[in-house]
Length: 298
Ligand code: HMG
Ligand code: MG
Image (cartoon, rainbow, N blue to C red; front, side):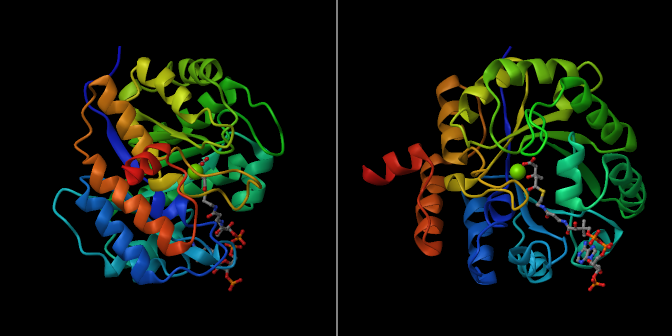
């Protein structure tokens, strides 16, 4: 059955911008974050406390995290791959963080320079320290429907890594189709395997739209009861360690779909679409939200 309410996790300021080759002003990021909050989004992934050598675009993580105008009821989160990242994020007053692992060995090596087992061992202390600081930790699993280096990924592998993150204390596990290769049936099969070990309401769908299947895949998993959806305004983004991968499913398109299904998200579609138009104009990108483009043309 479809959920009655969906919580949208807006990853545009992080996943959406991390791969941009030209520097984006911190002020632009801050305005983007605030416009997203003004549209009614309650959870925004604002920054990433990763190595600036690996992801230069996220080098201003401290300025972003401390420059935010915090609105009531909005969670501003950040990625923290290790203790160093977590400590820096805590210093900046972060409310919530995320660790990110993968269901693929090769992707794990390319993305965070360690094996899957090593990454899980590294996340342990991050979770302990976060718990001590009363900061919740979300867990990501990448390559849940395919890997740019290894190809097909077995649902059982996704289930194992997801369970490890959940057992370690991640309150929610976000399932990433990093390179957007999934289709509705593979998405359902993967979710079936993962949800044997983790309750459906502790899982999120994080689908990239490289092959144009993200909305269809979302429809499939919403029908199975997924009620947390990660998306990026204007469909911005891509992963620096997954060549050719395009952005996340566009937030505007997700909200339009949810509205049509009678599923509440608390988000104002017009304000969101205006934000998508604004950010794409500002950074010189094509708006990859069909809904955003349609609304702008009205
Ligand atoms: P490493 O080189 O193995 O780390 O990188 P290290 O511990 O050996 O340290 C090397 C250098 O990095 C040192 O500096 C550290 O201080 C520094 P140096 O002495 O050489 O000057 N360093 C850091 N600096 C800032 N913040 C930190 C940090 N940690 C170490 N937290 C590391 C390991 C994880 C740091 C690196 O591989 C990295 O930063 N990777 C990030 C990759 C990334 O951000 N990818 C994109 C996000 S994931 C994604 O997009 C997928 C997702 O959307 C879901 C999906 O779609 O599937 C989440
Ligand atoms: Mg992603």
